[in-house]
Image 1: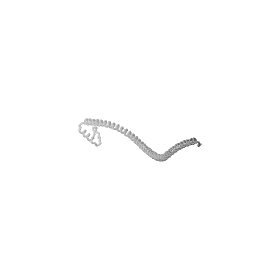
Image 2: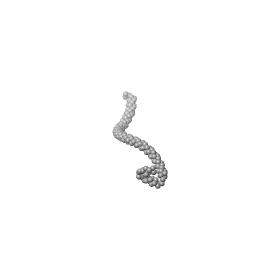
Image 3: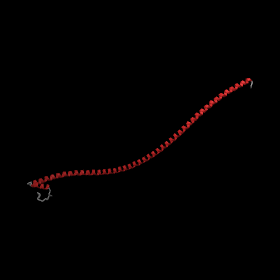
Length: 187
């Protein structure tokens, strides 16, 4: 029963039981009213503190929710960027594979051309060596023929000079014989 004469039913809690025991220990209704006012003031102050804490916590929760929304947006952007990067990576890998295949093909074609050129060069070099050997052999034969012709020419010149000398001697001998015959009156 309250000090106003009415019956108040409180939920059975430890604090209520303690408050009732404290009030029962007081002698006068003024003391009980003062104690209740004091308890009410304490509870009001505690309620204000709780309200402040609640407002602070609600503000913090609001900030956390905003941050969560912002982070979810950033996460979505990061997932989108990751997806784009993965797509670009796949495209780059396809491009690199294509380039590698093209370069391999070019390399094989170049190697084939190089082998053909080397073979052609070796064949041409072989032909040139054969021609040089043939020309060398031909030149050696010509040199031999020239030496033989030079020897023949030298012998012909020597024979000619010898004949000239013999002819000159014969002519001078014939002339001397003719002049001797002419001196004897045989002519």
